[in-house]
Image 1 (cartoon, rainbow, N blue to C red):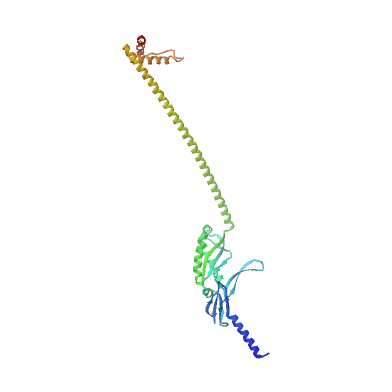
Image 2 (spheres, helix red, strand yellow):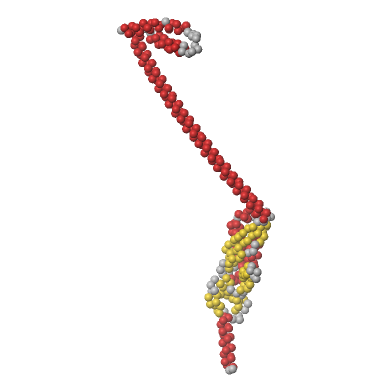
Length: 330
């Protein structure tokens, strides 16, 4: 083979190698840290970038992956990669035991949402970023949960999430990481605590049921009492109105009787004036006669006691007869 042709082929291959090594295509939302002769040079943006082969090399970073092992189980592993993903990442940490303030051991399953904002810090400020984030999250979670009692841990998830996010975001800022949120997926107390909580919940439900039943009975009794009260009021009102009507009837009857007596007295007075007699004696005599009639009307009245004044009055009955006779004659 011609030596010149061999040289041309070698040079061509070498050029193609340099060109392929010097061209770096970066995907959208990814970046790459470039070192020149072992020193940081620049950070590549998305698109086509040109570097100097041999002199410029990408700096690898540890990253976290979930893979399926031979047993079919999902496991977490880390490996080196050259591209740095700038999208929001989710780390689902394994369940861990945490001791609360009241010395209760609980299991917590947590998730962390974060994003790399400074690739240079994420590359040079920490050796193994995923492992550091996991350990920091677990430690912070133990510290925060250790300050709370079991009941507070179960009912204050939002408060715990907010507090964890603030602490982790501040701690990871020097690594070029922004922690967006922390989520506690599950908090599992021990079996004996769960049984006690279930018994407490049943007792609470029974108590509320009894309270509702008592309130229902109370309202029913109140309504019944109000019904009885209203009925008694209506009854009393009816009796009152009936008594008023009876009194008004009796008063009207007495008025009519009085009017009749008044007219009778006027007539008798005019009649007595003719005989020049005393109308008072006549009226008194009439009252005595009516009283005597009532006294002797009883079946058991065998003895009648007359006052001494009555004999004088009765003696005037004859005079009354004469007076009426004179009136008739005229």
